[in-house]
Structure formats: structure tokens, C-alpha cells
Length: 298
Ligand SMILES: [Zn+2]
Image (cartoon, rainbow, N blue to C red; front, top):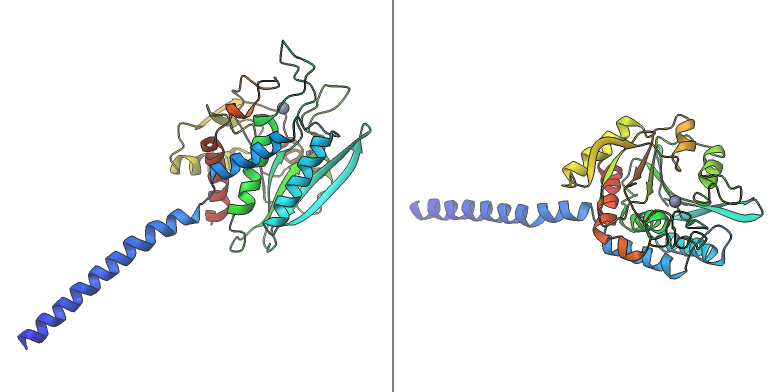
């Protein structure tokens, strides 16, 4: 009997060790794999856009960028739609990627992919085009990496990735701002539960504040997620700027919308808005906040 009791005790101890080892092995991995947005992959999407050159609406590089976005969405299994229209004789094209399996309320994640025709804040070269690394490529880069990283199958939302055209030529040649997002908002056939815009979010010296035309509750929710992820130094939950951006047409419809934007960027609308100013870490922080919001929002 003593031997059997001893054997039983050994077996129980072995089981406890196995269970503990299993928990150690699986739990951290499961947690780490759940949010897997990769900043270096996002940065590669920014590099690809920059390789086309400046991307103002109507330019060949702009058309190539749109084709690149469509190809990436298709390669990741997203359904694509385009909204083509002419604005002041320029061919404009919004692009929407819709998750192949989509159910539940729609959430739109948006970014503009055009760049500004003239770097009019650049005292040395005010008529040169902006390269648009942060103002253009960074938001698109986050959306394209989200196309890979997002777990849309188990989401309780139908996710749309929206790439707006003609955001950034306001005040030049009689153009308005936010032309593409205005077109999309005015032609919506569903009412999204929420819209999140990512614009100028790649600055290596990253600081995002509450944008005051954004929905306060949704902003607070996103900044709380950022704090929980350890991004409290970059996501500062205090109001700072009010900006006319792609969120405005959705806000006008009463749709909860947040503009994630880091407006403390000295290279804004200059020829110095180049790749060396943005970082994989900054793209990753914004991507992971959005991914967490989508995947872990109960
Ligand atoms: Zn701009």
C-alpha cells in the first residue's frame, strides 16, 4: 500500500507539473499571437509607396499606388471595391477592402493615399510635391498590415479598410480638402458603428493627443487600449488639436469617428516628409491599438 500511495503521489505531482508546463507554454504564446501587427511589415508598405514617387491625385504614381493597394488587399483575401469619380478634371478613386467573412455592424478604418501636390510650407521649394512619407504613406501602411494581421473571421464586426483619394490638395488650384472621404460618406448605404482614421501617425518622435472633432468616448476607449499596451508616452489622453481631416464627413452624419493624428510634425507639407522621419515602432503602436480594438472589443 505504501508503494501504491507513493506512486499515486508521484503521478499527481507529475500531472501538476505537466499542467503548469502546459499553461506556461501556451498562455503567453496565445496572448502574443493574438495581437500580431508587425511594424516592420508596415514600414515595407510605406517604402513601396515612396518608391512610386510623389502621389498627388491624377498622377501616374498615384494610379500605381492605388493598384498596389488593390493587389495587396486581394492577396490577403479581402474583397475590393472602387469608387471612381472625376474631381476638377482629375480621375479620383476611393478603394475599399471588405473582409471576406463579414457579419455584424460595420467598422471602417480609413486613411488617405494621395499626397499633396505642392509642399507649400517648404520655404525653399514651395512648388515641389511633398514626398508624403508620414502624410500619406504611413496611414496606408498601417491599413495594409492590418489587412494581414486582423483576425476578421472571429470578429463580431464587418471590417472595411477604406483608402481615401484627394484628401490633401486643399487650397491648391481651387481644390477642397477631404474630397474622397466626403464622397464615400455621402454614398454610404450602411451606417457604420464606428470609423477610425489614421493620418500622419508614423513620426519616429510620436505623440498623439485627443483630436477635438473626434468622438470623445471612442477616443478615450482607443487611448485606454494604448495605455494598456504600454504606449502611454505616445498616446497622451489630453485634447490638443482640432483638425479638418477625413473624419469630418462621417462626424457630420453623427457617426462615432476618431482621427488618430500626430500633428506635432515639423515636416508637414514640406519636401522633408521623407521615409527617414517615420519608424516601424510608431506604425506598430497605432496598428496594435486598432487591432486590439477590433479583436478584443467585447
Ligand atoms: Zn496633408
